[in-house]
Image (cartoon, rainbow, N blue to C red; front, side):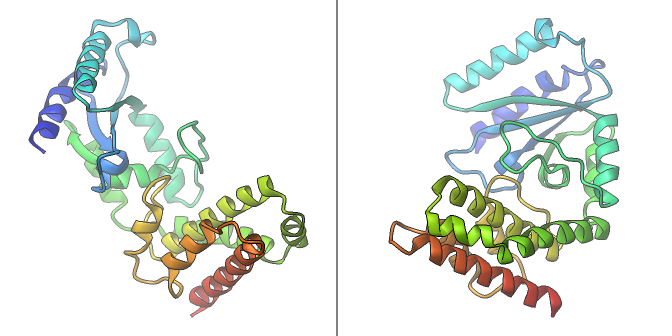
Length: 261
């Protein structure tokens, strides 16, 4: 922990200096922001500013100093996922849309189910916040937005209802169409998790720690984590995919009972 504190203390001023005024706000996101870091976790730094040194920032002395320090720490076994540079105005605009129940869809190669801004902002560990902007965003998100909850439940419940009754799913199981079945299992698992987190007014975790964080939720279908684990690890038996489909449909039914209670 002492060396982690040293890393953060060393990198923060270098990251903040990427901003045009040298006062960028710095935060740690990912598993470290969620307080769930383990030996596999890297350091996901965010920096927020009105503007940055210049468009070709990689050519600046500030960036070179950041990169030199990053390589030095990585040589000591501390992985850093670079730094994601965000603008205050862009985040503010997207956050207003999310809070109003109109999620802004953004996909990056490092996300499986898209980027969820409220998850990022609500969970990130604020390191340096000279103008209190990041703390203000966290305060806005302290209470789960009802408009976002309603929109999330409506969207993902519709997905689950469709696939629970659609005959194509059954025919793909009968044909043992493995590419489809792997895809649909991920799609349904994501939709189920989106529903249970929104129902509990807890921000969806994103790509990591979904089931461990779901285990902490107050209201869940019976044996939720064990059943989800069984569905996502169907095994190699002859009836594995038929059983998985049956289990998914049973979970969807139980979700509807929970939502209607």
